[in-house]
Amino acid sequence: MSKHDAKSHARRIHREAILIDGHNDHIMLKCEQGKPIDLMKVNRKYHSDAPRLLKGGMTASLFMVDGHDLARSMMIVERALREIARHPKHLMQVTRTADIRRAKRTGRLGIMLTWESGMALCNNIDILRLAYRLGIRSITLTHFEGGCQFALQGTPSYFGYCTPEDRASFRRTMKGLTSFGRQVVKEMNRLGMLVDLAHINDAAFYDVIEITEKPAVSTHGGVFACAPHARCLTDDQIRAIARTDGLLGIAFYHKFISRKRATVDKIVDQMAYVADLVGIKHVGIGSDFDGLGEGVWPVIRTADRLPTLTEAMVRRGFSDAEIKKVLGGNFLRVLKATIG
Image (cartoon, rainbow, N blue to C red; front, side, top):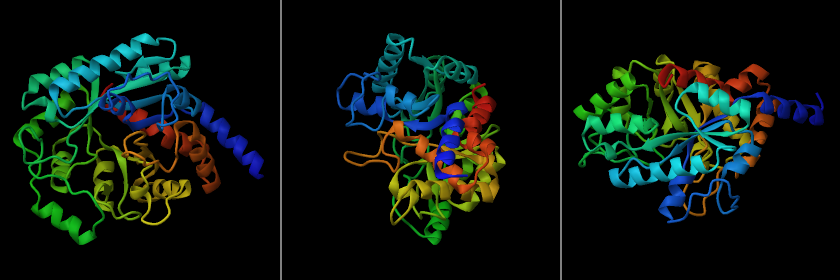
């Protein structure tokens, strides 16, 4: 296949596929900055917005709308819902997988609201149930915090490069889920919410694996064997997630991709690594667009450049079916088993 034919082939696969991104911080970032969400406005200071996500082929993204502070979380949820209602021809809320398929058919961007931390639950299970009623369908159980009031794990998560010996020590010495954290996982399973293990400490990670009766995911992270960062999953953790029929969403943050020069091909390296280790059905995309810190750009710099990932997978020799699974089919399967 010529280079031109390969690119055309990749573009066709990309158009046909359902694309699901496990993590996008755009709404939260705008609210933190005190700016209107304005999802339909292109602003190249950011990694993403609705026009560029749609141009890049995105079907649905999991948008973070806080989770740390209850009052702020309620405010951001309301602003997000209001923004969706302002643009019914281009945006729609996702609360079930049928909504994602509808977004694909109608050419709209599906928005699934998520919390990145369980602190806003304030140790009250009724707040979790209210969050579900408001459309929250996934919670990242912690955003590093631990051992403080309302944290769902007993020890803060480590952030940074580390050794395999460090990881083994973290699992032995860190305090895992609190009793309320365990209750949250069980209730999320019952309600139909996605349990997200991104940011969790290594002890709490295995607590969730032991408790959950539904697929668990790490929505935005990486492979420790490729980039030895504490936010990346070890082989044993990848196998554990696979046993729940869950997946790892590969983030586009350079530190999670390589300690040297991070490239799109190295993102594909991580996808291939997971596929070889546990099967192609256990890997997806978790860009972390607009969540990397001021002045930090992802490896795939902006949402409209997402087709370059598909082109790289075609060059690597992934089949059409495998590429469609990675782009969104795997996330769709996991969401069907969790949110319905």
